[in-house]
Structure formats: structure tokens, C-alpha cells
Length: 315
View 1 (cartoon, rainbow, N blue to C red):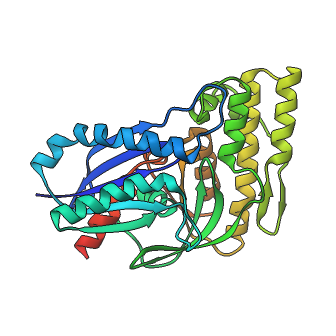
View 2: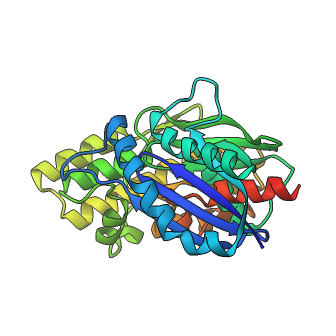
């Protein structure tokens, strides 16, 4: 029985995933990078250090799977986006492991971008990569982009057609969370605090021009509210998520104006239950097919890379 390995070493998580020939997940092992309390991220050197420590531990966890299955291909993330100028040292540990394993076993290694990995994690959940172009929304800790995507032999050819002109949705949420003394990354903690109120909160207006939105003004206002104690922590979190949705809704309006019929929504922020519900409602009202990964595979993972390796080996 054949299996396919996916590796992702991002700014947030060290991830391994193994899928079978039918793209079903056989094993998944991840370790979130440790960020000191009060900090809003790590240096690249610290990321590399933690990935280098984490990878052997995660491979040891997956040893039973490697004993049961024949490893037939490796997928790995090698850069943030599929562009010549896109580079981030954090991906080097995973890339090094993938190339070494492939050379040792005489199998192929398939290198994709972190952005492609997120979208492929969604497509794995439906078990297919369509040949027709589609729209996608990538919403994560460092990215909020509206994309036009065309599948090809290398992965996904991606054109950015909108997004944020300053803060990403994830940065907005994380900054509010850190100001409230929540652990970083703060997304899951902000969601827990907001759960009681988010559905009834309107949120702040979000400036939009030519398909690009700005979260810096609303984020500054929430920070002032926190300092002045104008809102409860729960109220701040609810207001933040409702504001994020108002921004994302404007990006979706841009795609809808271009006759969007299918939307792939990917990235860690799309694990948020409130945003998933709002997006599902938006798409249902406009007869747009919405594709989402399960919440656990919206966050950083290796499933997309593993799926791509399996898909390429099948074809």
C-alpha cells in the first residue's frame, strides 16, 4: 500500500501529514511554534531553530505509518507564494527533509508554495482538482487576498485581484488578542471570547477601494477602546470578528461582480466558526459553491502538500 507525505514549516506550525492513494489522511502530526507571552511573532532564525527541533519528533510519531506503507512521493512547501521573488527561510528545514527523503528512497518530491498548500488542503477535502479556473480567498495570519486561480501541472497558478492594503485579517485579530493578553496566535482565543456576541454585532465600516480593503483604522479604534476600557474583552473580540467579516464581504462583492460561481476559502482564519457561517450564508444567497476545509485543516497543515504529491503520482 502506497502513502504520500506532506511537509510544511510555516511561521506558526511544523506540520507533517500522510495520505493514501485515495487522498484519505492516514496520519497527521503538528507542533505549534512557541511564541513568548506578549510577543506577536518570531524571528526567522527562531522559526528555523524550532522547526529543526520539531521535525525529528514529528517523524518519530509517524514511524508506525512509515512501517505499514510504502512512501511513494513527498510534497513540501518551499516558499510563501509561487512567485520568483517569494522567499522565507522558515521553509528551508521542511524543504531539506523532503529532498533528503526523496533522494534516499528514489521517489519524487513536489515543491509547492504555502499558499497553494492551503488551497490544496481544501481541494483534498472534496477529492478533486478541477481544471476550470476559480476564485479563492486566502485569509491567514499574514495574508488576506482575493485570488483568481488556474490549476496547472506545477500546482495552482494564482493571480491576486484584491486583498488588504495594510493589515491582514489574521494580524488584526492577533493584535487585538495580544492587547487583551491572550496567547499568540490569538485566533482561537478571540473566537472563544466572542462566541456569545459576534452574531449580533455589526462591526466597524471597512474602507475599500479598487478591490483592496484597509483594517488599520478599525484596529486602531479597537486598541483605543481596550486602553480606555470602553468594551469588555468579549465585546472587543466580537466587534473585531464582525469587522473582519465586513471587510471580507467587500472582497467577495468584487468577485461576485466578476461572475463568481465557485469559491475556495482557505487559510487559518477560515477555521473561525463565525466567519465560516457568514461566508456560507453569503454564498448560499448568491448561488455560489463554497469549498472549505474542515476547521482543523484550515489552519497550517501538511495535508495540501501530501494531496498534491498523491495527485501528481496518480496522474
